[in-house]
Amino acid sequence: MKALSDDQFAYLLILPLIIISLAMIVYPLAFSFWLTLNDVNFGRPSNVYIFTGFEQWVKVLYDPQFLSSFLITIRFAFIAVVVSLLLSLGIALLLNEPLKGRGLLRALVIVPWAIPEYAVGVLWKYLYDADIGLFNGILYVFHIIPGYTTLMLESNAVELVAIAYSWHMASLGVFFFLPGLSFISQEEYRAARIDGAGSFRRFWHITLPHLRYPLLVWLVFLTMESVRALDIILTMTGGGPNLATNTLSFIGYKQTFQLLNLSPGATLSYYLMFLTIALAMVYFYVLYRPKKKAD
Image 1: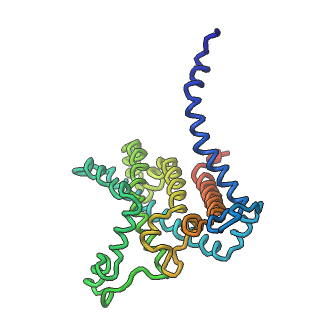
Image 2 (image 1 turned 45 degrees about the vertical axis):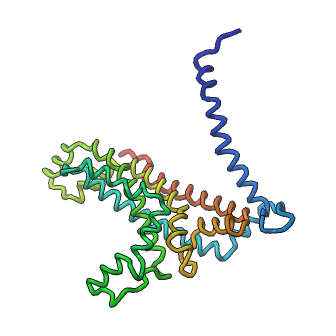
Image 3 (image 1 turned 90 degrees about the horizontal axis):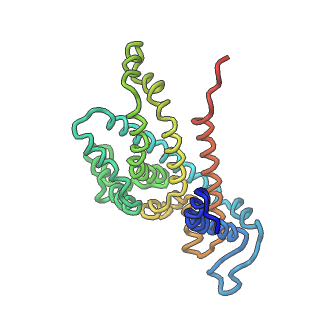
């Protein structure tokens, strides 16, 4: 019997991993796509599966609730991405300085992300509470509001939930930026100071270019997570008040797990995937496009 070559033996070793990966990725994708081509509703007493072709795609797209939830999703994701980015980058710049106890601070900064999203929602729901909320107390002490009042209104619910979500995600972003900051030579900063460059110019022309690739990875990951954020919305608002936080992921959850109407939920998941891919392509174009060579 002919002995296996090194390449053949290596492929043989990773074959089980390839099979498992295909089973965990390809099959769920194929099954979810099949759900979009059928009207699958376990709430019906009979005839659960009805083949409809691409009718679900059109039906979901032209549903008035879809456009409203799409805009809410974009609004939530935009605020969460911007606030998380500013927080994570600011904390990373601070922890890159030679502070006392910097090692301990770097270990503690990951705690908000380590807390489950469900627990984060419960925590911030109490912080926003009209009766015992910390923010209500602070605003009342400084005479900004006349008394304890409901902070979570229909007009600002998306922003308040997005801020809570940003607190949860920003600590993870710190560890995307810290390695890139550690590779920046201090000589570059000294030379820039000698040339008269201020803090902003040093950040824009030295720090930011070194963080371009970590920034790209972090933005793609953060956008993907923000677009499909669900647990924090479930615990803080339940889609309210008055459907103000009814994101695409929330109505997908409601259709699938509450109404047992699997097809709209699966179709919404694909629209979320397309949205994430489109935003990722924008990031790649802006941050990863090759620089034009000088003539």
